[in-house]
Image (cartoon, rainbow, N blue to C red):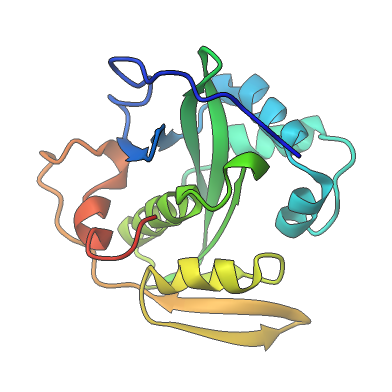
Length: 209
């Protein structure tokens, strides 16, 4: 069993000025883009994941977290993909509690993947990460999202359905979901969600928890 102590939220979340902050019960979660200085936090997050959660996300238990894997999440080429991290103030520090990867495959198609800390799964963090990744993909021109949901099953399919009309199929030995996105909302720069544009407006009517 995994356990963690949720500290009292600070007056201003560390991610406030970068993206968005959501209150999920007693947990305050911030979303922002990953940066090179996150390398120690990314490594710590990946090392805390259970072998089963690593297997669902990466296809193998990943017994050793390589420097290459950490670099994948902290030095993305924004022309090809972006990484979103979910952070929360836990035990007196900003801790990464989830990550999403949005890869821009080709015109109008992007692929997303996400993973959440074992002890915080089921709290809505996956929905927030998927929404942010979808918003980034839409701003990059994507109109459809692809996600391998083999490891996440019904829960992962539910997250994709929360983003828009979704169909699931068997593709190259994996269960895959394709989601059609609504046209992006024009961002006037005044909604305070930084690089994610108006994702609160795009997905606010959908279930985020």
